[in-house]
Length: 304
Image (tube, rainbow, N blue to C red; front, side):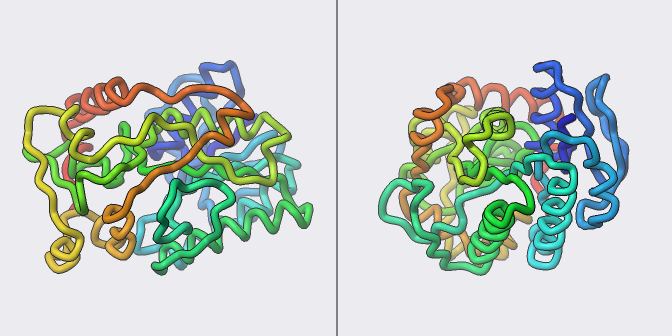
């Protein structure tokens, strides 16, 4: 039994689909208990921060995937509670807990990011991400639960809300906050989900952080050129902060916009050497994402 918590979000929905394709039994968890999920999925309604509910739902699980992504304004209050709840639930079930993470804890870097890089966050959200990762790894080393952490570059794909999200794909003119000509590592959402599954089923992966395989670094300008003919509009980060910004991600994540004023290269050699696998070609990933936005115009509107 694979339990996907946050099953209707960008990462969770891909995990559900991929697990079903592999013939696995899947229990999908979200708050409402309603979702347009594929046939054959067991759907459960629960609050991920409610430890009692989650212990019941995760009973019998072999793997629990933590794909919960609270609204950014609620991260500080809610994320630690969700972590504690899922550590307890997966631990009581004897399941491995796989967490969908990002790179904000590394701070301002001057070289490609690797898993052994020290945490030097320069923003409150980066401090939070560092603490959350350490909470999980400490629980693993105490023996409370088996843990693996999948850490992605800047995500893109269907449903994804990121700097490679609606501001590039949904507007008449693509917008980029930061320097569009610096190298950056985009990670396709399907590659993120597949990596999480590998970490769940490979015992040698447990107790560690792993960077998700991605294609070669590109630039925001080159990325935008694959979307369509619209000319990219760069917005300096200082101006973006002063304007209040146009999206929830940018508004509440303004403090981490420094990442887009420096090279943002994520090295995933550790994973590919150990487990193999390749990332989707960038042009193919962008084409799939463009198709999704065209087929879901209401869901792809720029966030307010």
